[in-house]
Amino acid sequence: MLKAKPFVKWAGGKRQIANKLLQLSPEKFDTYYEPFVGGGAFLFELAPKKAVINDYNKELMNVYECIKNEDKFVLMCRELNRHEVSHSEQYYYQIRDLDKNKKKFNKIPDYKRAARTIYLNKACFNGLYRVNSHNEFNVPFGKKNQVNTYDGVNLGILYTYFNLNDIKILAVDFEDSVKTAKKGDFIYFDPPYDSDTNTFNSYTENGFGKEEQIRLSKVFKELDKRGCYVMISNYNTSLIQELYKDYYFHYIKAQRNIGAKAKDRRCVEEVIITNFENKKGFD
Image (cartoon, rainbow, N blue to C red; front, side):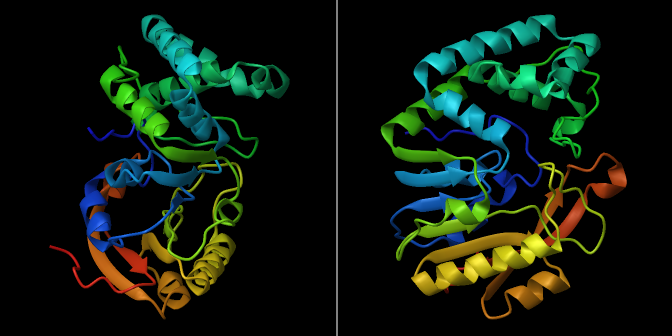
């Protein structure tokens, strides 16, 4: 079966290191869990037959739900076609500002909200998803004269994958998303990264700070005790070294391009941490 590709650009996307993640993954596992699925690069590369995918970003997970549902899928694509025809700077801000009126926004059909999320991702500056403290999308216009919002073949592959396999879609806190994980399951955490500087992490209105990193490490250790295979990606910071000092560290260099300024687009050291030893290592 053909493998799908991410349908949105997402901060911290894993396409460039997906092969390394595969090399470090367990050869056999039962259910796959990804509590911070984002654009889904590693999910699509791994293509498990049974999975629980989650993200706290409800608008993003609504897109996944619409891709999986045949009727909503068709309506979403029609709406995306309309966005492409209507695209302009004025139109972009008109669509972006829909979430300022929460009562009206919450009444918008799922497929229209899904199309809005994709359109904004494709038309905004640098493909960045960012919200303010009121959970309002606030990324400026990307100054594109035209936008291609979707690849029909790719979305078709995604629809087929979701419907031929047992894929559960959630939009809850990461800790809640793994409550059903048991011995032999594989969990991959790709949270907003820790940093010793003020790095972007506004995927949701609440952000993801040091306390959340500490809470995540406790969940990691609990899953380890249950007998799960657990893997996490993060920056190589002093906090991360301390939180996971009893586990296996694998170091990689990765290019991060989400920064608005050229100086922020640099090669950084990341770590992939596992609670199990993988003797294959990297090629």
